[in-house]
Amino acid sequence: MYRVCCLMIIVDDDDSKIWSLYDAGPRNIRCPLIFLPPVSGTADVFFRQILALTGWGYRVIALQYPVYWDHLEFCDGFRKLLDHLQLDKVHLFGASLGGFLAQKFAEYTHKSPRVHSLILCNSFSDTSIFNQTWTANSFWLMPSFMLKKIVLGNFSSGPVDPVMADAIDFMVDRLESLGQSELASRLTLNCQNSYVEPHKIRDIPVTIMDVFDQSALSTEAKEEMYKLYPNARRAHLKTGGNFPYLCRSAEVNLYVQIHLLQFHGTKYAAIDPSMVSAEELEVQKGNLSISQEEQ
Image 1 (cartoon, rainbow, N blue to C red):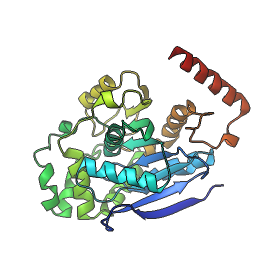
Image 2: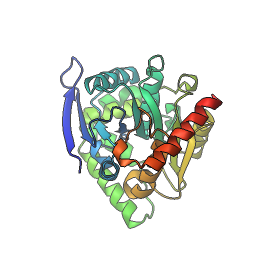
Image 3: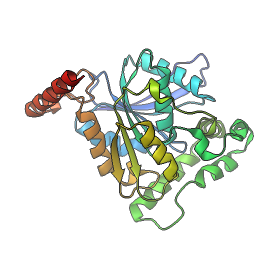
Image 4: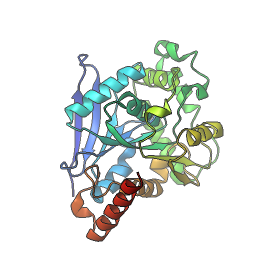
């Protein structure tokens, strides 16, 4: 059983900017899977992924970002965090805002790539879909209760199954733990006028994960993601709402494993080689040789 380390790291000159993270799994893995939470989330919303994936031999890091007010500032801080952790390249799983920030970071580092692959869960590529770009610069003025009301407005309000109801309750609890500046900065990042430039990240393997039932993401936003990444793998969940990683964790974990399988046997594997069977490694090496010959 691997240890789970809870760390608080400062990488900016402003020592009030603290990255909180859980680092679990084999430390010898140099290309782990990093989870980025949505607006309402903290690092521990991915506890089901941490428990399951580390049990299978993967190194995973779930983090909570400090207060950043623009995408460039976030990307610079995240790059410094990876430098501090001595990680040259990583796989990123981003949920909603986390997925958008993952894409922006891949775009930001495209000349010297730091992102080896992306899993985008209920995510988007253009902030204009929320029709809030005109209010993005005023979130910092709003009191905490008003910011929470804005976020809660996107949570499912209709009848849901008990597991999904528990997931919503948990996310409401996590939302309550966030301070005014944390929430205001995340909403600013979520709604600040920005979009992903696909030509800068077209060579990165992508899995798009979304749900067929009600979520904060519109059908148009989903279609836009499919157009942006025509070669991406698609992981569709019949149900799961806004938080499938909590209420449909078994399916999400399976899709994560399928995504990471393509890197087994390479230096970018997120799993301890001793946890992979020799037969599986041979198959992966064969697939890798075929894909390299095709290129």
